[in-house]
Image 1 (cartoon, rainbow, N blue to C red):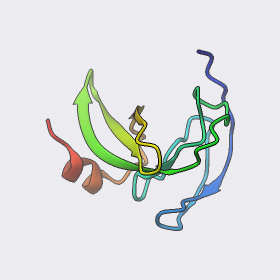
Image 2 (cartoon, rainbow, N blue to C red):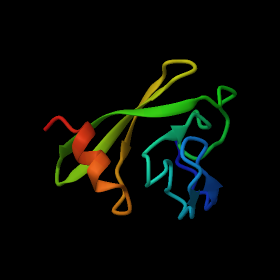
Image 3 (tube, helix red, strand yellow):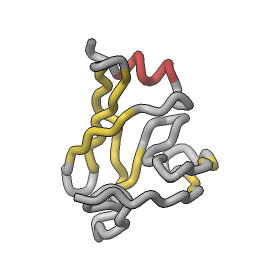
Length: 96
């Protein structure tokens, strides 16, 4: 698996926030929702394009992570949280 860095801005399809991408951005920092667009990180090769709900937040090795689940196909994916992420939502979804 090869990571492909792509700096892309997007509008969150869940909450409407305009998100400035930095090449590693894979979810909205306001609501934590994502979109199922990749097969491998950054490749934009998924045909699913379902919305990915943040279903769980954990903490390990000094950083938060988010588990997203696609509401269309059920695929689950672990993503590292960003310093810009909404701390209230991270804490509310967390099980530490």
